[in-house]
Length: 202
Image (cartoon, rainbow, N blue to C red; front, side, top):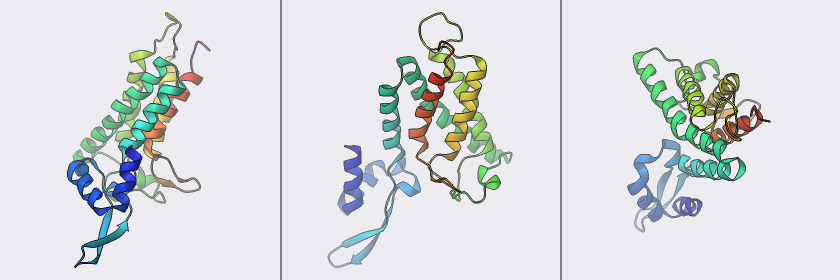
């Protein structure tokens, strides 16, 4: 249903007007798209730029995949990281940038196709890693008290570091790799795969 609505707004200006009126405040610039007038008398328009699928679509997709692919505790942890750590990365990055203490990753990787405004930063990635480590404690224990997954501290740190790198890379063009999938899809899958792989019970 989400994908159908997106395709309708790509093709139909009336659908797009309705969508932007109701959900435009939730969209990033590349998710909005642009129209240009081709016939003013008949009010006909054509696409100047096609909007990207909203992050919410990939969020739902990531949650769905995690639910079906991983054990319950791992799936919950994956969704928790996506719901908490990703927003924290943005908040931390924005705060440090306003204070003048932040460095954007695009300054280290100038060849990456990063947006002119915003984008991943060192402080944001650090905030993501720390919050991810804390999120792994909510559902996954450190000792073998149950038959569920178990993670050591070093495993949690590994999950935090790797997932923070994925969060910074998601949705961007990288040399040799091309376009990376959206971070809302990648984060829960990476966290889930690492949690299963590093499970101390295995």
